[in-house]
Image (cartoon, rainbow, N blue to C red; front, side, top):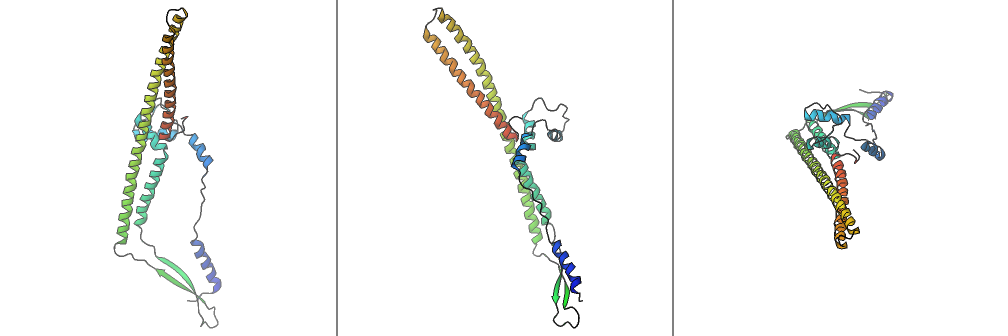
Length: 252
């Protein structure tokens, strides 16, 4: 069958346009990402729904007045970027299973040809091609098996990442608890030593005791003050570490 060039051109243009892929740029915006990170909090309504679904119980008071290890672990599962990456990898692997199970599509197309022996009509002709790929030697089955293995590996990786996230939350929470307990203990010790030193200074002013006794008390008091300052620093660092393990800003 011979077709004129005027009829052939629209078919060629349509075929070329059908093969074009649409590109949608998604540039990374560091400022926007930083702003979104700073808005994260323990009062997020999406987090409330996440806790409700995973704890299997109604969350009445929100935000919660107190948090335990299990709840904070769910917070980390909700916010931490490591979990997002692991979930994305699993989604890609599962999509690969679907892709691996697909069969090759037939390829149809029109090929323009030039007939040098045309007599009085257009020398251009349009040939129709149809290719039907057939996979042999069990290639599709091997491809599906490989995709399933990759999906299982991604699922195990997600479980491993979740365990690591939980471990970091638990460790940070223990360090924070220990730091606050140490800070409380040193505060009481410093107050007692401060009171004791003041009493000795009053007795020294009346000539009742010697100076070395006051000096020893002052040294012990100052050592406790330094230890208390160090405990406060450790508590601040523990809060920052806990926030990092949860995927939250420190103020949250």
